[in-house]
Length: 246
Image (cartoon, rainbow, N blue to C red; front, top):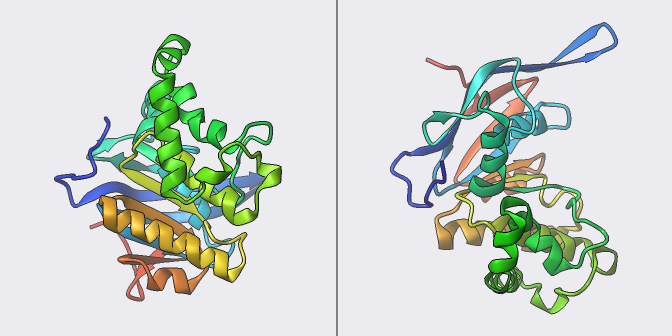
């Protein structure tokens, strides 16, 4: 289901009437209460909301890291949330890149080894070793793209927060995804570093026609987005109106 970055469809990713609740003991806590969202291809899409509004839960569903109680998730016109596990794994490894607020780098690996991880996971051991030189060249190119090639051999403990986030972005780009999902990509950074990360992500979208979904509580990030949705109490709003399926 690999999608090219020049897609015919206006919407690369869609959530349709999605509900999600969590349970604490015998108490049911509704998080998403019928969310519909269309992610516009080749654009920076911002999902803005306060902590607890449901935006990170929605991202996890869009990434198939979790499944909705009801409703559907579609990628390039095909339903993905109920696909077999192998297909959902391939979707996360090949079609999308995920950037987490707390980086999720493996502490025992260097920056370049962390960037190589998706290639190691997505191929058989034989194929990886056969293509390892090409993979290393691509990893170096990705680190260079995010301005981190000079830190290729450094482990996460030896890098700043901004450097770790750049390494995480390089890792997310490694498989040439058509879509990046970024959960609070600047939320753990100081203002200046956060602005540089935002500038990098917006530049990637502009230069490479890359679709980006940014989950954030920061309205200044929304100001830099092409499309902006606002999450509140498990519902999605645009232009002050709740988004509902037709």
